[in-house]
Length: 464
Ligand code: GDP
Ligand code: GDP
Image (cartoon, rainbow, N blue to C red):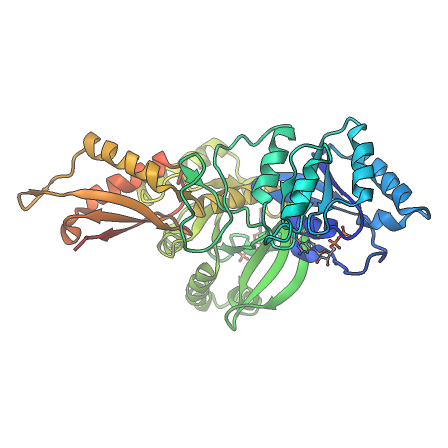
């Protein structure tokens, strides 16, 4: 049984809104009118990397023909039976109502873990309500805005100690944004800002013809809840299919190449030619690329070319070794692959590799786990403080060589963006900076800050 969270509280405090945020925006309807009958909903929720089950009790309000108070109690009794923790939600703008207070009293005596959640806390209008909330005796209220996605980090922190196998990550989390580095606050060297929930991951499945891409796509879509059918994509030829996996919205990027394939199957040359262009376009549209290989013919030249494109475009790469069901000597096949990777793609260490069978639906979960993990690394931000404590140690361990009789000076490093991780290095002689030293630093970054498997970019800057 997965860890289960029930969201309870009087009507209109925002339960469904939070549910939607945890489970996926498109799954349900939020209605302004109290008293609209809704079904109780259960979904797979996710906050950062924690997965759980969520029960939205909003619909139960209408299920009992009784006073609101009695209905709330029934609603909650049922929810508590099925859940490990209750999120008791109040509307901080409205303040604590007598009903909230009465209910909190009752809830306190049930001896179940309860997290008090004060919703609608965006802006200042909620401050008074936050103070009142303390008086409910359910501990510190967690201030969130379900509608705006704020405070989810705090909710995550409150949930973590209650969850069985605490994910145990030491990283502090901040809200996501694209290019701006977060404030230097909190602890830990790195920040994984994917808490902005359900920002869709654009996923592309690429590879040579006949490795099993279509089979894999179909398998994934069959196994998962498709949120919307194919919709027109960013470019004329691309389409996106929205689905969700453990609460994470995934946009599967499909390009015309795959769809056209059926028609031109026989014309091999043409197919090869077309798939290169299509593949490039697909890579550019994606955040994470799954490169599908045929276990019977691992890593030929074309595979490597595609893999290089992914890296050059700065995308996160996952290698899926498909048709694993046809392999007899698994150990040997793995060894061959790892040898090939080491020699031909030393720039990217630690690319996640999953053996699987699309045809038999085997290891799809493992593949998707790898996709989510690498997406997190791709979004990772390293704080400036730790970076500049790390840099002198690197320089000491292996001082830069002389360039035309002068020692290179490396003054400062900072991460300027994520997706992929990109660093600015302030040096004395940018033009003459040796590649080998750059590689040394990049490898160091990769190892020290857990950036395995994603491209790392460094831009050299020379202060005037
Ligand atoms: P439920 O009855 O408890 O499930 O509440 P709903 O999720 O249906 O939300 C009730 C109303 O509150 C809706 O109009 C939402 O748009 C609104 N709402 C939900 N969360 C927030 C929030 O964080 N801030 C504000 N200002 N309004 C919210
Ligand atoms: P695409 O050209 O990459 O889209 O490849 P397809 O999905 O059309 O698959 C090519 C062939 O490989 C088809 O005959 C599939 O049935 C077969 N195939 C795909 N995945 C697997 C697998 O995991 N195991 C086996 N044995 N065959 C597979």
